[in-house]
Image (cartoon, rainbow, N blue to C red; front, side, top):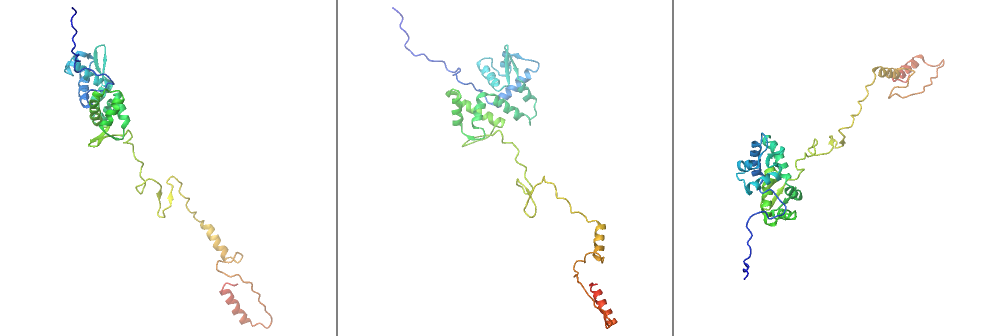
Amino acid sequence: MADKKDDKPRVMPKGGRKGGTTFPRMGLTEALTYSDNVAKKTTTGPQSVENIRLGVFENKGPRGGVKAAALKQYGLLEEKNDTYDSTALARKILAAIDEEKPLLWRQAFLTSKIFAQMYETYQGDLTTRPKLRSVAITKGVHSDNSDECVEHFVSSALKCGLAAEERSDGVQLVAKNASEPAPCPGEDGETGDVKDNGGAAIDPLAAPPPPAATPDPKVVSRAKADDMSPEGPPARGKVQVNLNLHVDSSTDPETLRRQLEYLEKFGVI
C-alpha cells in the first residue's frame, strides 16, 4: 500500500526577506558608527568580508549581512571580490570637522533611493507617519516592513537635519531652500527705495544733480558797472523818464539850478 500523505499544512520558517523595495534596516546614527569603524579598519586597503563582519558588525552570518547592506544603501560601504571597503563619502565623514558633517550626513541619507523618494514627496511640509508609510508602500516596500522603514526614515532625517522636529501632530521636514538668504533690507528696515525727508523715492543708483554754477566775479562786476553807466540800461527799481526843459531869457537861473539838483538827486538825470 502506498504511504498516506501528510495532510498537515506546511509552516513556513519565520524571518527572512519578505521581498519588496529594500531600505536601510538601521537608522543613520547607528550606520555612521559602523561606517567610522569600517573606515578605520580599511585605512590600508580593503578587508575580507568575514573580518569586517566579525570585527565591526560582530556577526558573520545573515545579521552581519543586513548591517553591511544598510551601509551600502547609505553609500558608506562597497563590496568587491569578497572584500569590504569604505567609500570616499565614508572617509570624508570620518575626517570632517563637526561643522562639516551634517551636510555629508544628508548626502548619505539621500543616497538611499527610498528615503530620497519619501523626502521629496513631503519636503518642506508637516507630514505624519501614516502618510510616510503610505508613500513607502506605494514605492514598493512590503507592508509588513513599512513601519520599520518609516521609523528609520524619521530618525535618520532628524539626525542629518532634514527633519526639524517630530511633534504629536506629525513630522516637520525641512525644505531644500530653507536656508536661502532673505532680501537685504533698506534704510527703513524694509525692501524698496530709500526715501528723503519729503517722501519722494530716490534711486540710489542715479547720478547726483550737478552743482549750481558759481558766478564769475568779473561778469558780476561788469554787470554792476553797466547798471551805473549812463549808456547802459537803467538800474533795477529806477523809472525811465523823458524830460524836456524849456529855457529862455526870462528863466530865473537860481530856480533852474535848484530844479536840476532835485532831478539829479532822485536819479532822473
